[in-house]
Image 1 (tube, one colour):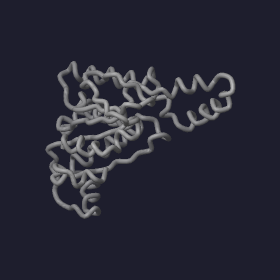
Image 2 (cartoon, one colour):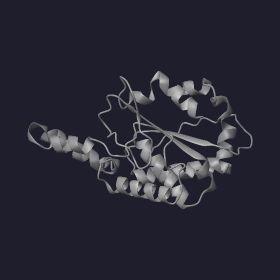
Image 3 (cartoon, rainbow, N blue to C red):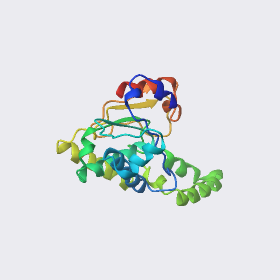
Image 4 (cartoon, one colour):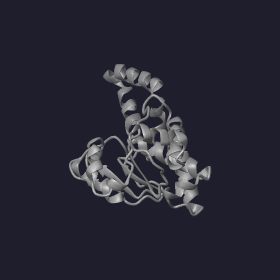
Length: 218
């Protein structure tokens, strides 16, 4: 994604790569931390201005537009953060947009894998998976019938019903042809997802056309 820095449209944008503890932390906790980050950046708080200064890009910031590009679990974290921003009535949230790659909004197939491993020769692997689930609570959030996903859908629908279309409705959704990790079903009022040939869950956000897809939305 560093190639994005050289793409048309990026020269007028601050391109930020945000990392978080995707497995060790519950999705809601990650969303709350991401919301703090967004609020600091969009509100040009002192912490954000200091970050820009240390990055060699000092100057005032008054962002007219905020595009959040997220992949897989990141789509859940991002949407939860933006929904919480809406409920907190943060003014910048109305200037935000979503572009999603392989989003896990409708759940993953990991719980089914666990059930399969629970039988026969796979029981030892199932025990290991259960242990990992204790260490990685976010796996519960990714189950297709989890409370986290139900709340995410209900809150998204409520926001749309209240006339808040942006950023609740994603601007674009892209899946890989061979994505067998997440479930490709339309979430709330999102547009019909595009599917890229010969890509899987991970490669869809690393393909050569990924940069161009992101740049078109800048």
